[in-house]
Length: 517
Image (cartoon, rainbow, N blue to C red; front, side, top):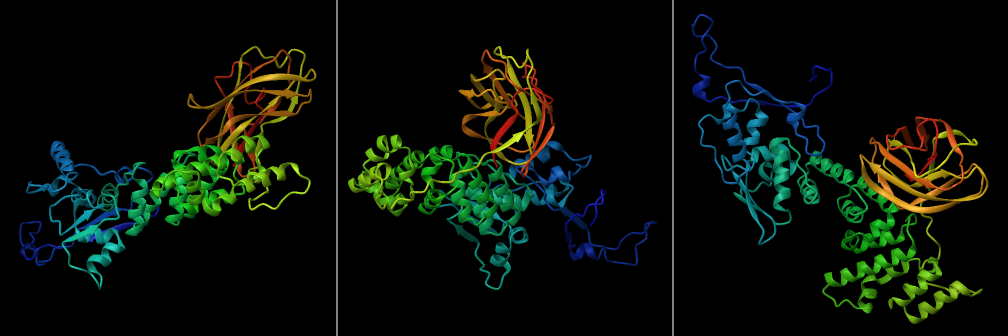
């Protein structure tokens, strides 16, 4: 089928089977005479397939028009009733209130009216009894079709489902009955599990999209564990991108302590982890403490080492800074006396002992630099700093992580600058740092870093700002570009209203964005 814009549209067609009493009734012709044919043509309805993102309904894509004589209050009343379990619709002609089969089908959601099966959902002590309609469920899921109409179908009026949360099961039913995807952060994983179990692929894809858009350093480790469980490689890759770039934030998050042992090992093995090794060590100890509690063991040093097992040797302790090792790992009590002595010898002795720990430093991530000027210059009265703000707006077409800015330095010889850098989105501060950098008098750029890389979503403008403090004039960029291709990432620039020191697209400061992709 083709719509008005020439696009292909998928549809399901239902035929309304009329009762014999109606089917045999003679049809009147134009002049009131009975027609020779006693058969009425079947009534055909179309249901447009849902194409949706988070919390978007099919009705938004293909809105229906209410009949002029429908009662809005009655429609609202019935819509409210179908949200409540064990409610029936007493009106004799409720079907007439809804012009499309999709809307009439939605009335049956979580409704006892004509229900021919019930589900007892949830673990013992937290169950909920939900009504269902076999035909509707079988149309929406091949698992339900096999359950109710397959060769091994069981004629049970009540089905127990202890491994699915009631809220997640309701979310799946809402999609099957109403063509509506309604996801929430606290139930989306459980909904994904239900969608996978009952093979509802479009709902599962919507859950994955929801998780990808809400992915951050705080939940990346937990979602990594779940994505492996659900066999979602695209989500797994997105999780690794966040964990690699924002490793220290991810390792310090509460969610890190909730991962399983296999996920812990995979993170500790990760070559591209962008974190200090002392942070990795402390995160592993925090995980071990929570794991002791999960296994109902006393939280002792011996038990922490026991639950870590061989994973302890995946921590690259010999690559720590000597101060981090001496003041941290060496005094933690987790290492044996022999291990501590051998690692100290590893740092200081010419003949290094053999260690069970991995001794090669992680490669981490190589930062990319997006340079937006084609040339730079200096003049006797520019570029001067008096506490004013240099600012530029930018947008990317792929998710990246801004690690810092490259800034120009003194045009009058060696000098030190104090720099306050900020990154905002629609006025909301996402990251800032106050630091100093030393310039050698050349026209090179000098990096100034945020404490942690800042996650940047595509197709949204962000504001990069810096306030520099120095008595020295500096170089400034010119021949600026509005669009720069940097590897696989396209960066667009536009002027910022926050800029009060002259920086814009064509010239000024902040010549470089430093990022991980």
